[in-house]
Structure formats: structure tokens, C-alpha cells
Length: 125
Image (tube, rainbow, N blue to C red; front, side, top):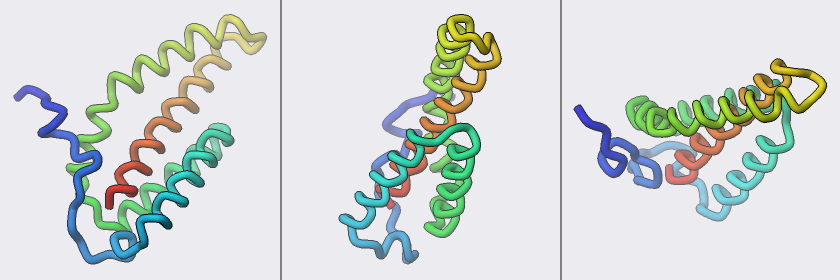
């Protein structure tokens, strides 16, 4: 089975459900979205993981179907791999921390991208 972005990714596609997240005002969702992005990009590894855990909890509260989340993450897979690889190779050797610093930077950037995707899924909820 071939992957088709328009068929397999529900990013931006509204799923009508009766949840507290769906009942929120769109302006509130936009403000929370902006706050989540600001929080993701000002935090380190632990902070990004905490934001990611919070987003997963809110996705559960919104009852977003797991296949929707999985297909969105699957579409982002190559971007995550390339992001990690570039961070690992270009940040690592140039800093005094060596390869470990590049790996940590790659993990942080990958977590941030996943967080952005999950936040965008919630914005469309």
C-alpha cells in the first residue's frame, strides 16, 4: 500500500466530537497553540518531553483517534530522521561537547517537531 499525504494525513481535517477541547472557542485554541509553541521552543530535553506528555494527555481528552495521530506521525518520519541526522552531524563535532551534544540537540529538535504536529492536530480539533 502506498502512502498518499492527502489520504493518510488528517492534519487540519476536523473530526466532529463532543469533548471539552472541541467546545473551546477558536481564539482560545490559537492562544494555547501559540503558548505551546513558545514553550516547546524555549525548553530543553526534559521540558520538551513534558510538553509532549501534556499534548498526548490533551489528545486523549479530545478523543482524537489513534490512527489519525499515527498517520500524522508517520508522515513526519522522514523529516524527523533528517532533522536528527543534521543536528547530530553538524552541531555535534563543532561544539566542545562532541557527538553527544549533537545527539541531544537532535532529540530536542525532533521532540519539538512532534510537539508542533500534535499541537496542530489539537488546533484542528
